[in-house]
Length: 420
Ligand code: SF4
Image (cartoon, rainbow, N blue to C red; front, top):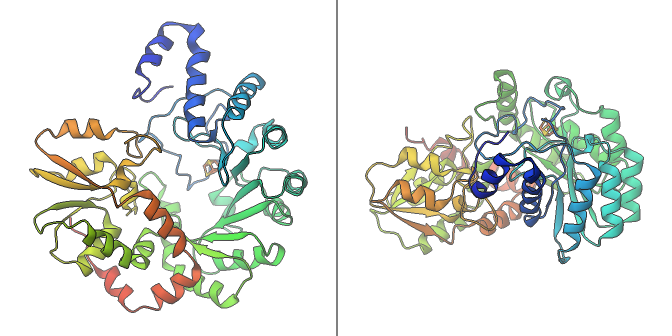
């Protein structure tokens, strides 16, 4: 079923009227995903793993299409198309489309491993894959040995603790996850805090069998459609994050250990750069600047009254989300009153690589048209390149423990109230 038409109106009108254009329409979606270096395989249904924390449970905020199960014919089209792209150093092709398709665990597709192998065999490109562990352990580790450095395997462990069965009712067993980890395939394993001895226990267990993979940790953020029980577990995880992180810090594991999922922590650790970038924008006291809670707290604390900070809650995603990068135009529209000039951080417009859209797929031009009396100015310096760079630079457990928890100022930062 189609949820939206933006950018597809012409093709869609043809598609509606003619069955024979079905394939052309489908292939156009494939092409669009591939332009973003996505390999658009599909299970042809919603993800059967049914994780209670899944952020794709409700993806109605963006436009997606129901794509049928990928066939051999589809695959041949996709592979041929990918082969026509030049190979670039450090560029990865992601298994799975997520611009116009819903995200699923594609290693449940019966041909996924064969196609992965063929891709590695006939192209010289690198690949990145995400799964909760549906890759057969021996086969994926053999492939990693055969094609060293070309597979970037992000294993979503999530948790190996007692809540695993409840949160991931149809996920592979812990034994399967550990067998995958026992080899060269996994480049990064992600798992989270859900309470005492969850994240830290998983980190120590994984590190015992794999000393090389990156450990990517933190909390999962409850969004508005996550059920109350899972939300409570996520919040409990946040409450225990500092304790869990300190345990990992003290364990001095040989693996690279990163904490990435808390936008407030990231903003605090990068406050100097945020302030410097803000100062460089040379705004006037009366200028209205859009931001979500994470940046609001920094500027309220360090640049009080230097501009009018328009706090915008992440209404689209809801729950506890608190991140400027994930704001949508709809979120901003809800907070505008009679402003004549508004400054927008560029990150909001970078929901899709090449076009000026937010994460919901709404074009900047559509948003501007809704407010003909308001002039929007884009703060180009506040962009995704900068925020991604800073996310990685200060994303280590060491930074969190030493520079966040170890800095008494973080308490003052956390106490900055967000406006209603
Ligand atoms: S495996 Fe991934 S896509 Fe599937 S339900 Fe779980 S989190 Fe969602």
